[in-house]
Image 1: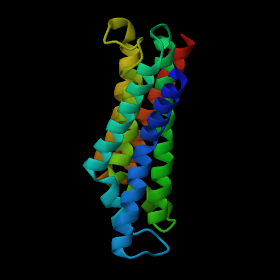
Image 2: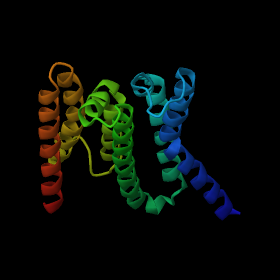
Image 3: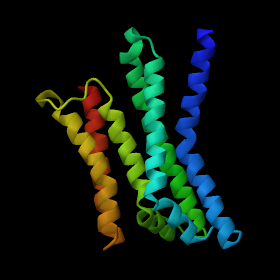
Length: 199
């Protein structure tokens, strides 16, 4: 009986992890149908979906609830290890969301790479959502606390959040500047993360 309950919780959590992607897809289809189906998704449909704060909040709330369900279903003595696994899972979801958002942005730009990047920047939430997930993935780790010994971890989190924000804010004025600063911040965060693991 307990195994059935755990399996049910696992199914609910899996559905909640997928919820951000499902919500974006369903809403995009709804808007696309209203605009009239075509071989290429209209740019306005992509932007309306990716600029919706309701879709963003609903997606993040679903993932956060899935994390709580997964964490709560673990035995108390196994929760420390489960937290690390959940952190990695959030980072994987963040990576998948960036890849899928870029594919959608590129598709709505008619296969033009530059316009696809601009769509990502204009969309805003395709950059903010993964950044928030990465921040959340670090936040739930027991080793990450606002203490002097963990200042490097805190700096990594700040850099990961600052990267898409710089891309968005600077990208409104200069695409090259936004991409350059965002990439530099991301590379510095990656370097600190790798050096942190070596330590």
